[in-house]
Length: 108
Image 1 (cartoon, rainbow, N blue to C red):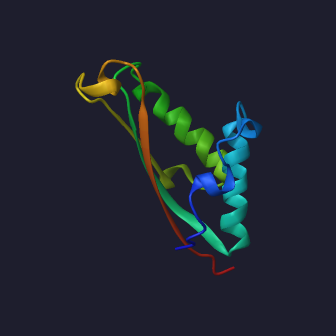
Image 2: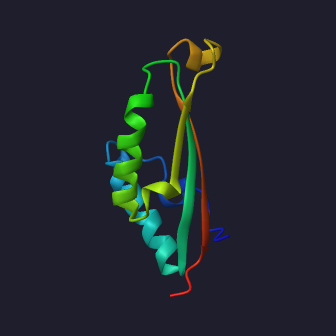
C-alpha cells in the first residue's frame, strides 16, 4: 500500500484542472506508482449507469487502458451494470464507477 493520499490531494477541485484530459491524471498517478517502485498487478472496475448500454465498448476501453498503462489487457476487468431504474443513476441523471487496483513492489 502506498498510502499517498486521495485524488483530491493531488488534483484539488480548482479551475486549473477543469476540462483536463483524464490522461493527465492517469499519467501523474502512474508516475507516482513507478517512482515508489510499485507496479500495477490488475485493475477491476465496474461502471454503473442506466443508459447508454456500453457492453460493446468494454473491449475497446480495456484495449485503450492497457496501452495507456502499459499492462496486458488480461490484467484489466471492466464490467457494466445498472441500478434497475433506482436513484439518480436509474433516472439517467448520473453515472458512477468503482475501481480497485492491485499494486505490488516492483522487483526490477
